[in-house]
Image (cartoon, rainbow, N blue to C red; front, side, top):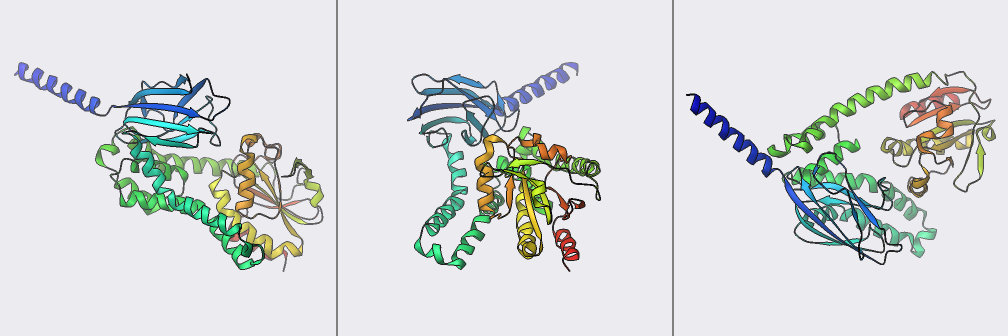
Length: 392
């Protein structure tokens, strides 16, 4: 009996070992740089979800305009990685793609981000490109309309382009969600599920559906466990943010004098809060990368248009950083925000944000013509109700 138990135990270990080996997927990235000056001497490989790469080379030298990364995936599906010229990644310059098992050949022309692919592992990224093709086509269509003669004088056409431009971000997420729902077993679907849940765009029943339809082998691997943890993490973060916001609100309570601050606008001209004295001003803390902020912008715009001729205005204070200045300016244009926008481009270290105890965004303070804070964190219908009570 003892011999049988030892034999069974040994067999179990062998099976477990084989399963572990089966989950390890080797990959090779062969890269070539063309028309890039100066040519970087070293490139870095970063995983977007820690632990999905095993024994990987996180940096490699560039020789004769060529580089190579070799390693192993700890999961049996495509994952997202970033190839960058520095240890700290920069989305504006870096190459982010889905990496799959096998060989991936990348040719970057002009910049890292502008690339073509080939090889046995290229199918995953090509699938991602196909998913985003709808947004790319819509962008190109809007660009052509905006360049037309009719666009210059047709207000209805201008309004339509503006509306469609605002929906581009949502369209991209909807296209991702639709693909995953229809193709749960595709190799890019699990990580796309991870990205969708992490974005905060998908919740409730839609979130449960995506998680339930994950392939069984994914549910127990590194990626599946990370996906399962997102709702728990998000709920915990929301509770913490609300608690922190409550404490922060106490730093500048309703009825107190609004602290003065000055930061540069989009033209690098200094703008002070006191310059709005005599008006009701909504000091709106936001950032281009903040999805809830961007979703709230149309609501603030509606309030602005309704009450701007009655003594109400908005002062946008961005928590974007210096490296994200272009994204900040694009977000202002894309969301068609007509009010004054300022920032010191120091991210969370923004001087005004620290002065007002802002630790989460969106967050706002409504200040009366005498510079007194009369309300905080007005969003959705609450903003319209408050303004309606003021401008009766």
